[in-house]
Length: 590
Image (cartoon, rainbow, N blue to C red):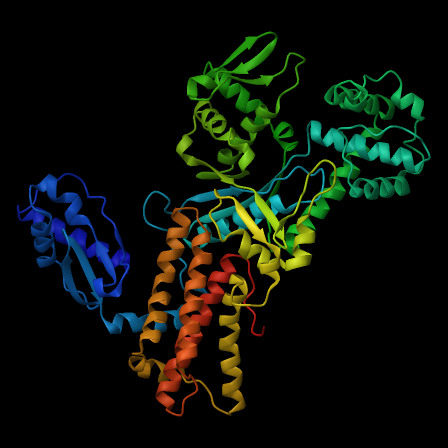
């Protein structure tokens, strides 16, 4: 409807311009938005206020000229000019009721764009990378919020007509994976009977023991070395008065030298076990990926080398203290970045360059990264990288997800990571259920901190937003079961014929909400804001519950009964559509 009204206004402006009544450059960037109160109409347009100065007219006079030249629309009851020059559009009842037919015809496709949205994103292929947690341990509740946000965002973008690929970047190379592999090997040695000191910077969770047990079952004593041989002459750890980073790096080096080819077996044992656990965990959370992109493939497929060659050819690399540096400050970054260390090893940032290049070499028009809030520094870094690689930085979006803080009984739940004392995503799902977790995670904007009330998420009350929305969906199913018990049936044709009977204020409120759904999906996609879907569903559920509590659906009047059943079923369909975008189920019973 908003697009229809925009076309009417644009055409009126063009007609006035051709007639010589108005003179202006370009197309004014006006907005058409829902009014806050129905008494001011359904939609308001600010074009007269924006264009008045340029055309040398008073806003109200310009608004009158535009209204006088609007093409007649069968969707409008009347058009008014309000305040300083807003144009308010009142929809007629036929247009309002027409949404029931559209929902009935389109079903689960209602609200989805068929060929992409208008503007710069039309027909774009978009890759959304999210979660991408290092496979060094189970996913925790912080990862859960990134998973829920990224998955919901991808679904909303897809519903708005974009071609979306969901990607998990597997950090299967680098130091953190070496720390995990060494931690697994040390626990393996303990299971072999060796008595040795575990490093301060090792991974301490119970899951490391589980991996070590599986490794010993497979390898026997084949990877065993004596404790003295392993620990001899290592630099002191932090708790021994030394440095934890120096100690763990030396221990990694010792593991590699003692194990030789066997080191890869310990490495793969950790990687494979944790990655499989992450896949299962996310799958049970309703989060699925089209691509699990290996960091190691950046080297084998040549992406990193091509990225460095591109920077070299552009004159963006220089040498200092034996290392190769990217002149990132030339593109707005706070400091230059090392891409090749003095020992010849490529840095994490070099991998970031190769990964960025790969996204566009694989044919994507836009790359969306979903990072945790602690990755704020990556924004300038990746934008600078894009410019150095000759890519348009506007095609790259870095969306940050703030932390989620759990509360139980009004008390904050403590958690940490390396120590292994953290609340896992799996534990959260087992406590509150995937539906509540998915919904609660996206109720607030991704850039706002989230206080997650575990007790509220588990409650079966109207105060629990996901329960409140799902209950509205289940209520419709209950009505249909009651209909069958009375040996009655729903007649859609009769409902269409009688829909003009839906004149009660509560019925009209539901209709208004149903009409808003496609606009809301587009807004959620445009602003990368799936919380708009969650908020909308709560409002639609509230309107439906108000209608249901105020009016009997299964009345004796057959025409009115069918009309109200049509309204109920349309509401149920839109609730299911919206819940589907958030990865939340739409139950028939509660």
